[in-house]
Length: 532
Image (cartoon, rainbow, N blue to C red):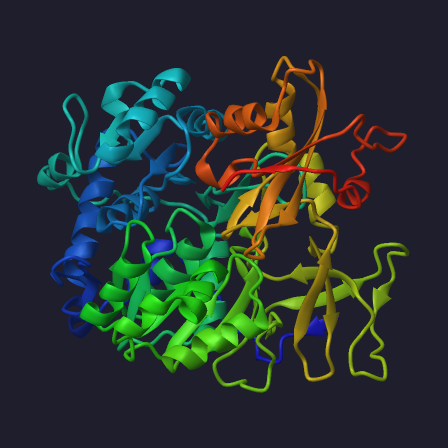
């Protein structure tokens, strides 16, 4: 067992709302919580909290409270924060939905989460309304934040001026959010995160991530993703920093926003680091206000990270986590420049880690002559470990053992200097531009095609060293070609899930128990079609 080098921090027995806003003083109330990307208009903490309270009151008047699940389908806009924290303030549970999802994908999550309300924005209303209708959510329970005929709007609900309800819940057991994750394998599952999980992870990150009240935090990574939810949104709000939300990533808009709003702390995913390191347009902007970049959601190449940091004169950090960990378990702290950038850093406070030999189940403790342990699966224990997967006790038991350790599916080594490096993985999950893609979900879709007899999906590297889904397909009809396979999937999934490589094979290698042998597929490289 390897403890965090940091002393344990106290995890308050509070709801997310009370932890973030309960001790707001007069000076904090006047501070900007948000700065608009377009014109620099500021929303104070006092105004934000008043909106959250009023939204919670309006929801409570309509019967939303403990036991209610509300779907939240929105890009990064200030109204997202009012809705998200208003739902939690009312005692309900928010299931945050990828803003790129199709109507079928939205409906699938709403149904699995047992959501009875949906909050969205007008640009996403066509797919949101279709999904709501499919699962039986009526129009009066589809809130369109910026307004749409036949639906309640944020302005309507806030204008009612209702006080926030009195809600009695146990932060340790009450579910705050139900984001969806594929875990180490399989289709997406609802990850049950309690108020204590979210509060704990913010408290664990304060010392290591080091967002300060003086910071202007650029929020381009989506709030619906657990990384954006905890590390951007909740941590920044707890630290009374100012958030500058961006609803989507565009490199020029990103650089313009940093320059015009003088952003100081920028949370990114690896593709943004690549752009900062290599794209010529970066030199046309003054982004010298940035002092820190923190990369997460997928593995960052150390050399790319160093080039990006040196180019803009900022420090680059990397963190590690999973939705199931709320999400952060390890990070390179700002005060540890000795830790290599291609590592995941050290455990955050209150986290205990161990490395376990996947073949023997024995814990790995000895370091070799090079100062590193042999590789082993990384297991993590701490107050940020999820309560489990919604309605899936067997998969929960396979992921969290009796001692409370979450088995990450990632293979790591531990160095005598105290940091960890991920070297491989057991899990089948594909990470594309920070988004999770479950091979099993794409395989089930491919098998629904009448011309496909069998299929398997793995992640492979494209020309930009980005992991993309590659489908291995056994034809049921010879007329099937790669373009048809690619188009079939693209029409039915969010853009990041598209199959981008196709190979036709005679058979899918499987074990005696019919499990796909993905390691065998990785050795097969027949001619493949590609789509970008």
